Length: 356
Ligand SMILES: Cc1cc2nc3c(=O)[nH]c(=O)nc-3n(C[C@H](O)[C@H](O)[C@H](O)COP(=O)(O)OP(=O)(O)OC[C@H]3O[C@@H](n4cnc5c(N)ncnc54)[C@H](O)[C@@H]3O)c2cc1C
Image 1 (cartoon, rainbow, N blue to C red):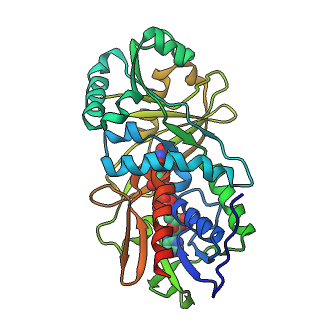
Image 2: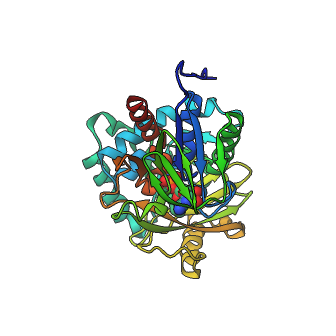
Image 3: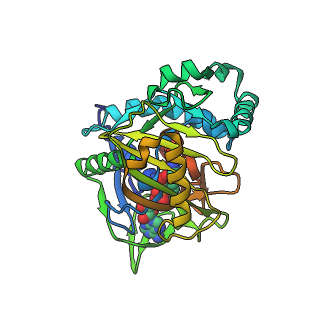
């Protein structure tokens, strides 16, 4: 357990708006470092309709490079090294695996897999190219026996990981309580200034403030937008996967991320829409039929939950830390929040320390 550092002089007080992944992780790292922390969120801590609670929480710097760039890749690689250290400091266990990712395609979608493979080869730095391994049908069957005979081959992306976001969010909440973080639940933040967080008519003073409200920061960050994503969570005891599997498709990509107790997160749609309504029939059909095509035993899977949330995205699709009018903003985590958060939060803690 990391020693808690208490500054000799005045204990600095930080106000953080937003208790999603970014807000919770930052609050925890700062509280551990001896800061006094107040955390504000419009929702209760166990609300499920946020991006952080909806995510599949795959840690896929390689696979995501196809839709991102070297900045996300670098943050992802640093974060993959930080996650095990961070999780070891939590009192409650969080499911975490780093057994790579498998990428497959049905025969008729071979061109999508081939394109994905070439894109990765083109974008990956030379030092990481060996992490992408081509598998023939026999090698694929060894890596993931349940898929034997179902695909001609695939790609294995070594070193990629995943974690259980619901367990992480709960574990962080426990740590924040333990460290005495003042958590103002159900408090809609209407305005943030350099030294105050305003909820309804009440201003809460602090020595510094951070805006981590995800898509709730739109008034402060005009270029921020929400990108809708939907996932299914299913239980299927007759299928065992050792690692996340991505299924290439010309129209949409499916991933199936295994979780403890025979559960799987199946996702995800990506829709240029800020609709926060329930998951649509079309999306359930697409996700469920792709899941069934991965292995017919998934036909008997029980649907445990359908979730939709908005990914907070900036125009360049990169996570960002910036300071505007004295307020720090951590945002734009888009589809890479879990992939990038530890390194990003570490960077922000460094900036805040430098500031005091
Ligand atoms: C379907 C889906 C799948 C995903 N899969 C992955 C994945 O596999 N890997 C990965 O790395 N990332 C994934 N992501 C992305 C990841 O979930 C997000 O990048 C990350 O959760 C964003 O965290 P955040 O804390 O910035 O925002 P949020 O989770 O949106 O949290 C913001 C918080 O601020 C609060 N808030 C908003 N407005 C206010 C206000 N005015 N006052 C007070 N509080 C407010 C909200 O209640 C919320 O608690 C996925 C996202 C989705 C939607």
